[in-house]
View (cartoon, rainbow, N blue to C red):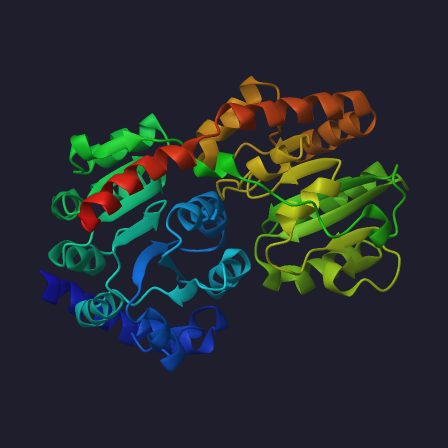
Length: 417
């Protein structure tokens, strides 16, 4: 079976190799993904005990901050290896990691590559954050007796439907994973339905609630604003959402209101700048503030969550178009009122918790976005009340990191015995 999987993976790689080489997103880290490491990396892993954490990209990396801090605190003699599969994820790791940690790319899931890498690094424990199932990685860790934990696990409705089609393969694979710490009861039911042994699955909550965010290095004055001016942040936006938010902003037409757009993919900044200038707005990119502007574009990675500290209202993108929404916990940390669209299916339970507590506003379209923004702009007390309720939801669900650490301690203790 592994030979067949390797063959399929290899054929796929050959077909798409030219695309990977041309596309910067996939080009970086190819050497590491093939199992080649610099002498410096190889020197650092000699005679060291390692814990390997894998986070697919930026979102998963930042959700692991509290866990990484706890691991550093309790296991100072261990070296943390943190892998991703994207350059933006790798950059995010470098922001949160300590100097002694290693930021790597996950090897391609070909058995001969994975086996060589795992043998070389020999981690005491391997943690996959959220949910990724790599057949060769899972099988090789199991064969080598290295415990594998799914931490902060989640399976979306869309992914569940996709995995169900190959359940006959999944049940064999999922039985090799040592423990599942899932975010919700729904996630627990789904992973068990796919074949995970029920006695190895526990709901421990969502570590994203355990976040700690520093305030932004920027102040409103750095953007040419007065303290009393209002900053609207449109966060993690996708195509078509920027056009909507810019039209709404134009209709609002208030000189004391400024807009900061943070696209989900920063390579789209130039495109959004053209859209804003076409609508006759002055525009500045955050990394190059040179003149007064009414619209700002975030063109750096990892700063959005801190910028919520100077926001007055937040619109969360990926929700007015069917992308599933994005993380509303970060603006909630700073008690900011949050508006999102009806497509929050990747954060369904979180969104429901905020709405039932009055800590967010759900809208269906551009017209409702305009009305909700106008209402909040005209009512400071309402903004503050919704923000306070958002923060209270966050406080209610904190504690997942410690529950996950209980499981990690057990497996590391068994490994050390």
